[in-house]
Image 1: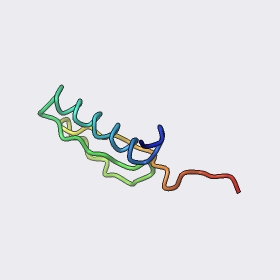
Image 2 (image 1 turned 135 degrees about the horizontal axis):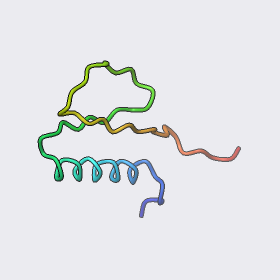
Image 3 (image 1 turned 30 degrees about the vertical axis):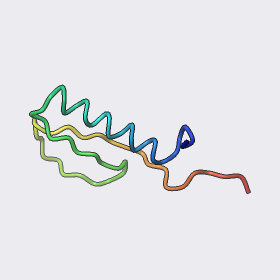
Length: 62
């Protein structure tokens, strides 16, 4: 069993969110974008960006 906040669990949550958006609005292009990434300033009414802040490593004491 994976820990509650493991990286794989967070990706699973992200994929479910992306699928939910596509189910509600199949006309939208869902783009997953890491926080801090430079993106274009073009407005696209058919695009929704899902901003994510990814922890590369699980913090540990020591």
